[in-house]
Length: 174
Image 1 (spheres, rainbow, N blue to C red):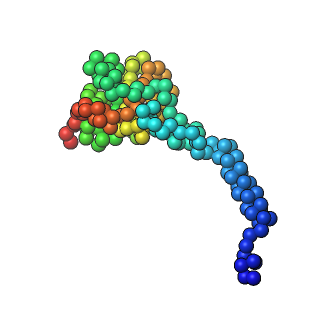
Image 2 (cartoon, rainbow, N blue to C red):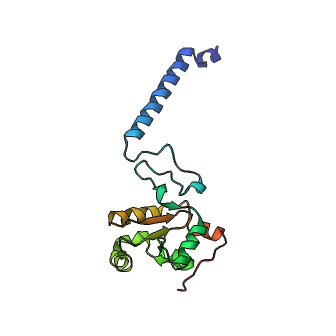
Image 3 (cartoon, rainbow, N blue to C red):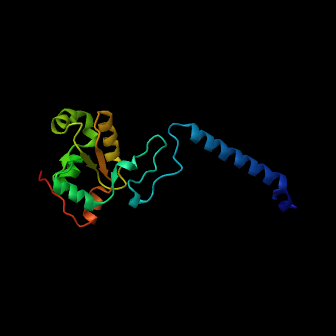
């Protein structure tokens, strides 16, 4: 008799299903309407560019990405683009792509005068950060585009992919 009182009836199960369905639908609607909602579809494959699982309003522009370190190496050798490392100065000093300039994203506003003296809005630019898990170079690209820069690309694999390809980095002492 004790077990008979604790067993769920079909009415209880139906109520649980209705309550769970209501909760899931409400959560999905709230997420959809929220400007900071979680994106349901992210970019998870490193071969396709920067990994992105951020909110709906924060996406990366995969169209500006360069996925091949070999192509980046050709750009560096031909001086085709100004190369900019957007990581911290400490990370830059530990190892950066050859001929790269250091303009950390975290110091963007402070560096605008020096950056504008170094590069012009019509200059072709290549940005990079640490790896495909880092979207700082995309954020930096957005800032540059708002300032009128027109030819901005991002090396999505960053320093990690560069080194994985067997290419050497330059280091700064101090």
